[in-house]
Image (cartoon, rainbow, N blue to C red; front, top):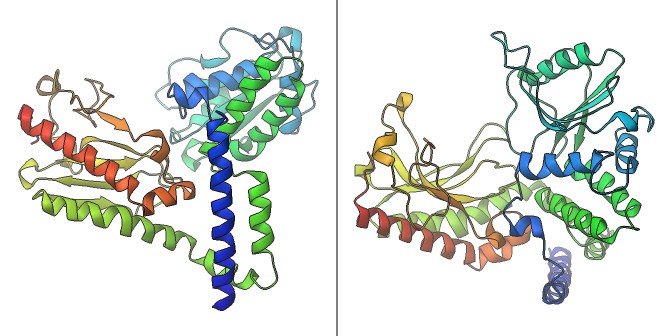
Length: 403
């Protein structure tokens, strides 16, 4: 125990030093990221597919011809002359429509990214948080067999390199890659390739940093090495191993103590009820908590994520939490022009969030280990409490229907 306490003390001191380094970087503007600023962080089509496709396009505005594409082919272990670069670069590289989905679900759909020369193709299915569609990979394989009989590469790209769902697959081969490994490796190659074009290089660096953020791999290298030095010390390895076994349980208890329990107390103060949905089967389902009045029946004020694995992109809004056969939804007619002013995102056709929703502010939007200090200090709960109180107040003021 004494050894463990000493190790934790060393790590705490190292952490405090790193916070000071980060503050100096912040003062210099080194944390500025245009993709975060304009709210495209997890936009699969508008940012990630579009940006990756632009780099892969030999006729792209980066002005480096096929060099980024060659680097990508190397990363996915394909010959760098697999494609005829002079014939690549059609307009429909992103979101190529390959026809309506047929009754059997084996043909049609939209391909996220495709680079092809008429003879060969690289087809990329890009998954950030969306779930797989039935027969999705099968449909792309069937399309590629017809259009590119000389050969094609089907690539499944996800945050952490997980396999596609069985319901999506046919029997054909595909390559699985991840943002956290292969895409970062490729972007670092692109960064070196673009050293003669500083503007292109700067944007690639910012995008690479964004990818590291959404995959929780953006820890400073020097800090990480110093941490590893402490953790690998022969006196500490057993203690580290013991703590790692409790990692998930520990983080769950952090959330319980500093967010969920205070939210339950808040609900009682507001004469409301509290619910949460955390024990979800599988890593790729949503999770969160809500508070509601008994007379609201099926609607509550939610704090939620669509990706519990990373507790990423937490948002708040008004939604239903249990509607058998969805017969008790608020109708579009009743919802019209009912957006709450305290929530900044609204779609009148959205059946799940009838009065709007919004992401948490950027510094607490992702509940990863980097913001534990903010969680423990109460900053996260204070923000949620303020937002919930704003929503409750506006619901009462407007006398909105919450059946």
